[in-house]
Image 1 (spheres, helix red, strand yellow):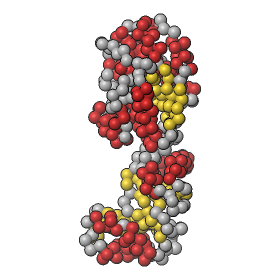
Image 2 (cartoon, rainbow, N blue to C red; image 1 turned 45 degrees about the vertical axis):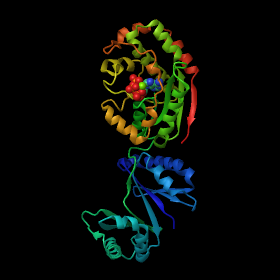
Image 3 (tube, protein in one colour; image 1 turned 90 degrees about the vertical axis):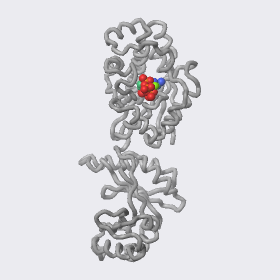
Image 4 (spheres, rainbow, N blue to C red; image 1 turned 120 degrees about the vertical axis):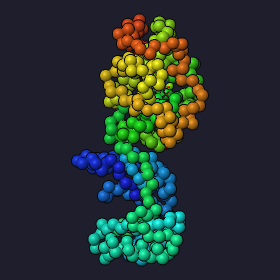
Length: 390
Ligand code: ATP
Ligand code: MG
């Protein structure tokens, strides 16, 4: 019999009446992610989703790695099924967990018996398997209170399963259960992290990037596409919308006070994001803003940029320190791409003395000289759409 994958559900188990829909969503997310590693059968029983290879060519290792990045799964274990017979179980534990048993100083066996017709009770089975394992691995002591290794034996309808400790997985909620949102992705460290954090809460993201060629380069554009690719193991397939921002920036520079340049630019970003969100029926915007990080992220500045949309603006990094953000960026694998030194449209025409305490009414007046509607329509009309696969 072939090794298979047991995925333990996280918060999904708390969902009461909605639970089944969470499980169904999670199973379809798993099915999509593992399909390129072979044909797997996917089903759920008792807060566990089983991912079972149906042919010997299935790449179980790659499927395990993929499952560890699927939100909604709290831990992943590899298990080996065997015949429902105490000696077959013992032999399987001995060979399958040989390395783990040698590495641990102490162990215990924990049995679960879903099939009540199995002749031994779970305590008796644990004692039987544990006793014989202790003989086979004399350097590994039995310790039922605080073992280094727990050997799990599960007796189910179809077979018995032996597995070692589960590895931690991504946690969170299945993508698609938290609604959908437009995430503003720059080339920086923060916005990939904010995208990841909202995806973790089950939000399906549509990615939006503003580019200002020729001020921003082809490499800067490629960098953002790479960030989106880096995010797909967590966020699933993504669609990236690239909206040209050059005309808007030039118009602001020509017509608005320099110290308000960034703020007015950010209002345009939020307006365009709002337009895209409404078109795609998204219910929120996501940004990588963090209180006090830069002049455009003071409380007054956030009020000014949030003023142009009636959608909730989700800012998951708002209370985090840069160090914490960097730690997550490294963990999710976006950091190295983020620090590539290509300019973003935010670094084009930055004011020497940006306004940190702007006033909404004043800013509205300053922009009134611009053809806001026309600028936004043209930018949206010229947007590009790129599908990002895993
Ligand atoms: P980041 O590290 O994500 O670039 P930042 O600290 O540099 O963030 P800003 O440049 O002020 O902050 O941008 C704040 C937020 O606005 C970003 O986190 C991102 O969500 C959005 N944003 C900024 N520039 C762009 C862009 N060119 N395209 C899309 N969104 C952007
Ligand atoms: Mg930035």
